[in-house]
Image 1: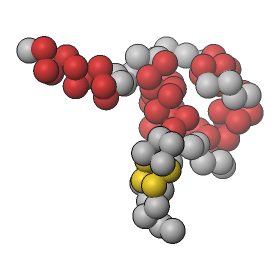
Image 2: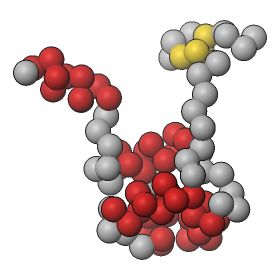
Image 3: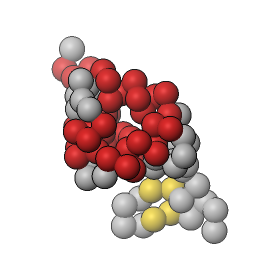
Length: 88
């Protein structure tokens, strides 16, 4: 069922995001001013896991990358951005 819905969350199962590139992961971390250890702590990952993501030895889940950007202020929640646009 490629186009089924997750009825509880009303999310299409066919919706996919691509994993971030290692350079994007590194850029997000350095823009946040964090070490690899600190960045891993933000998303509850080990230093080794973060190193593997930045080296391209392991793929970071797109949702985890989005969470990292949200928690470090590198990205705004889509609902918050929409609310602000509607207020203007």
